[in-house]
Image (cartoon, rainbow, N blue to C red; front, side, top):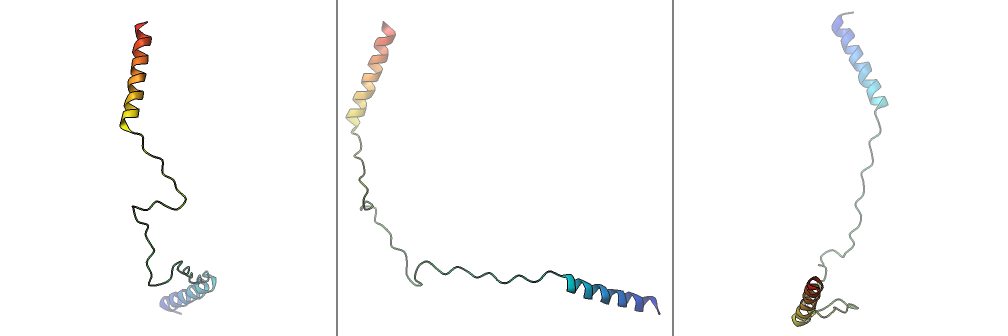
Length: 82
């Protein structure tokens, strides 16, 4: 028996053992079905229409906030002056 024959036999045995002990191939994963109908686009809500059930708060006028700020500043000033 030559060295090349011995080497070939060993390689064949190793290949057969490795294929027997190899982990099984995993099954292909299935994709989830689409949540929307194919060929349709989702509807968009316009900017001018508020969402149903939502009551947006009115924005404070600039005059009210200016008055509040002036009152706070005058109160601090009067406290420091005493």
